[in-house]
Length: 157
Image (tube, rainbow, N blue to C red):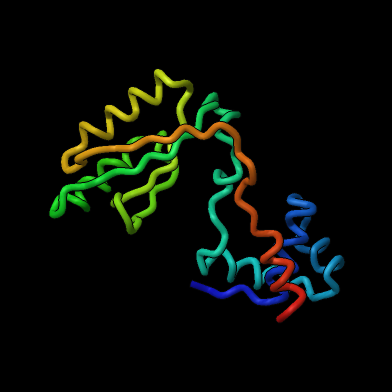
């Protein structure tokens, strides 16, 4: 994966401030050449640093008002098959392999608790899934944030 440097961080922070800024506007704001900004943005995109635009969408805008975290235990030997099947459930929006008592930790969105029950049953019907443990999020205390890390990188090359 491509590593972000000070200029990359400054470009990304400028885009946070004005997501619709053109390459020319970014170059003027940052005091660098237009071609430099264009090349850096291409490198960030090619280096898989920038995620898809859909990651910015709040699931609540799609009618998914409930967020839950589900821990799954998977039968050894079925893990890749189970992961592939779980990836096909659209309401599972993040999946992490973990250490500890569970094998996977999922972030799941649902329309309500009845919908969450349906989604949990889909998970339990997945070959290789042994058990689940679900926690419903009451309030997002702090959304994913990277601004502070970008600022640190921008200031300390």
